[in-house]
Image (tube, rainbow, N blue to C red; front, side):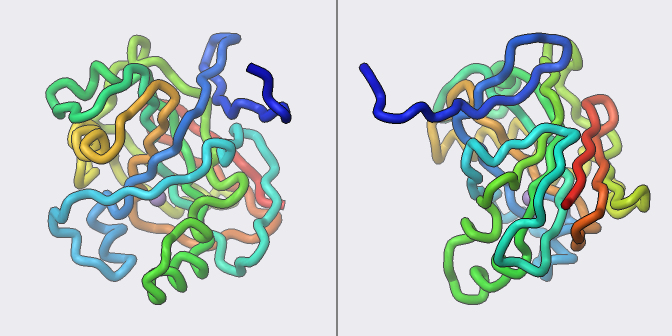
Length: 227
Ligand code: MN
């Protein structure tokens, strides 16, 4: 087979390895920490989790300068634990979910909040608010074989060294196995699928010149600069 264009395969660095993790899809979980659901004006009862997607080529590595994106005046950070699928499947039970996980990273679900709010108000899709270029900064990946399957640990984010988000991944409304059970009931998961698992409270805007740092204890940290 020959292709009429060369299209780069998006990928993520793997800590301590030359090989990289190819990205097929990026799934994101909405409202997965109660305090964040409340700050967005929702009651965090255990409604089933819901998902949205970003394009695979939205990943950008830690250390990147990211241009302030167009068509927004309210760019928000959302610090998240990221799961990387290593074995595919559909209808995966939460009991089996860890067997499908290759590893973990930390990432930021950059959000054009003004466009997302407008989409919500108009009953329109979230794509323009969530799935834009460079909207998925991510650290290196760490194999579950090396770090295990984290179920607790501080999740934090700072803007210009001022702490804005400070919680614990133990507070996820839908934990990782539950999330994989729900997601794999909607889509066949495959190696190369990333899951951004949701953000704790404290989201807010950044402007050009801001440096964003954040991480999950026991996983990794990252840093990006908005230019
Ligand atoms: Mn998010």
